[in-house]
Length: 141
Image (cartoon, rainbow, N blue to C red):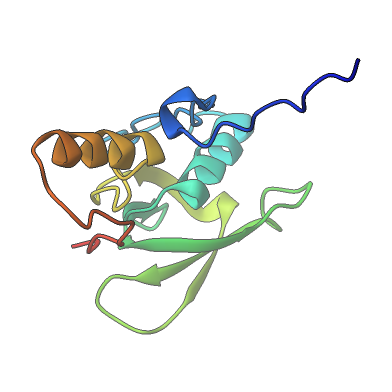
């Protein structure tokens, strides 16, 4: 006697869904930069942030913009962060050792745009009877 092949289930309700990674809410955060480790950790968080930050230099100059790169190094004065200031097309490199303050001042442009949020909206639209619901990118702003 042979066993029947298992039936494949294509029902999305029956499929396993893995939860997405949780992200910290960084918008509005002003980290302490009292130690070298705190500075490195805060700038690593800023690199992963999807909004603007404001860097205050030890000279008092403030630069608001998007951090698009960082180059860690063993010595703080050799590690740099690269930022695109908000109002110019120039790119600025800043040694970690020149940074006195950091604030997550811009809106996180991807907040609330997780896969889980999209699926929830999809099912809400489907329950409301909408047709031709598909995956379409939403405008960031």
